[in-house]
Length: 89
Image (cartoon, rainbow, N blue to C red; front, side, top):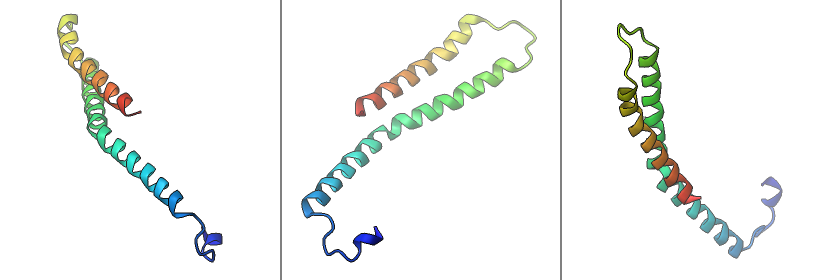
């Protein structure tokens, strides 16, 4: 950047407008996926907690159907978030 300081107009106005337009589009895309990213973070936290529960000592055997009921909503939320992120790109 320093080498362009003494040049009056190192980049044309049209180029700057094109760059700004691209940055604006990128900013809007990032804003639109923010809820999906937060959903991924929430699911990650829930899965970490589930891992802790699975690693705890249990006096009775864990029921696979109950575990599926616990994990299925997390999987659905993760898939939904992934689809939202893919729609942007």
